[in-house]
Length: 344
Image (cartoon, rainbow, N blue to C red; front, top):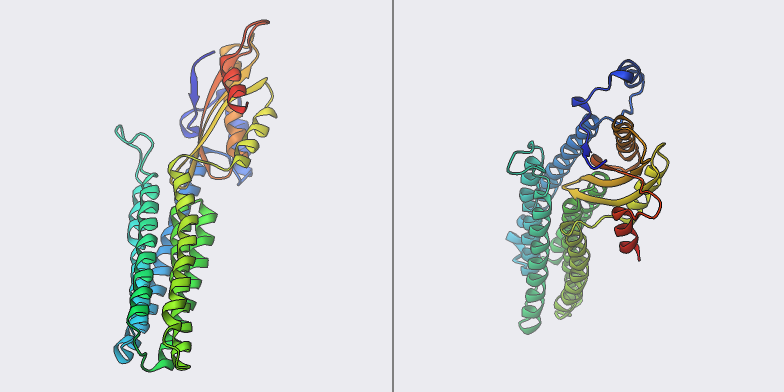
């Protein structure tokens, strides 16, 4: 059997078990229906939007408090930190646009929907982190060449602590929510907030050195923090690059294969592909069924295979199942041969 089956559960009703099916889902809240998965994905987008709004407010208040201290102290270091925090708050804009676009339904032109907008937002965030690292490095080198005294050191130190606390809280919040909903872009944005927290610590240490009369402390610490930002940039770039290249955790593939092999009627698993579309997963798989199975039987096995995948793989919202007849003795199955070749 060579026809592919993509089952959108609200649109296919199997009469032979419709009553049992409805009673089961009436009494069982944790339904595996695709519609429920889509609702969960929309809730994930809502959580992402809440994370953006909350972090935008926190970083906005942090930047405003630092700006007031900059006005009275004239601290160039704190000014740079304030610019960083403002830029970090503004990264919520591309992510917010991506989450809104991700809610739009698929069209005949964008048949997979608009979820990949999150990947584009992730690229923008990575570029923003790179710009922050470059700015921090340039500021540190400039201060090495031209040391400047810092006025109102205690106020600058307090503002630096406020900047660090605000950024670290936002970083933890964004990373936690991003990992919970599967958004690589939101995780990268959280890492970006953490880099600005490091910059705030650099301001604090530099202010401490200035208080002790060592003006070179601030630019030296600034260079060290620039290196730390570069390491965070590497991690964020790797995560976003993998998402753009359709990389998934191999453990998810193993989990999906185990679930498929437990489906009655599945004789083998051939090609299995998973890809992220925004913070939702999509699967394409070829399963082997009995060569003597009827079309209806093969269809039922494909539906059961889809159900198993939706249950077993977190954040999976769609599965395309291809049913192949088991090859006759001496006949090689092309899908299994391709899969074995890929493993080798």
